[in-house]
Length: 88
Image (cartoon, rainbow, N blue to C red; front, side, top):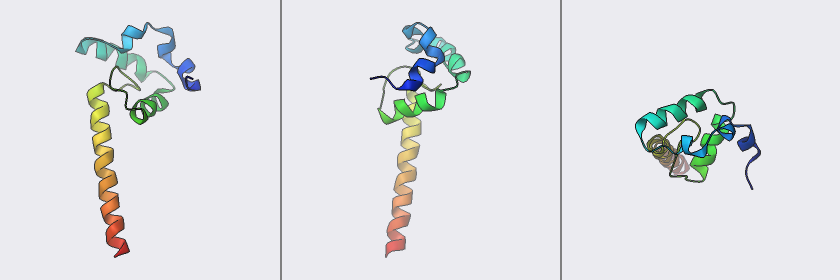
């Protein structure tokens, strides 16, 4: 079942291959469309939560999403260490 926000995305009116480009130029085209989209934040979170490896989601490329996930992991580890110190 597709999330309700998907039907509201600007991508719904575009060919799917627009958001699964084979080159950097295609990525930039997709990102420009996403920049104008009202559901891009939900789209990005969906891709991050579901670990979607391919395509442009929420205005971010695969590489950008990997960086976001890595930063979130580091932040969570830092918070966990801080919590452990407080519990001692």
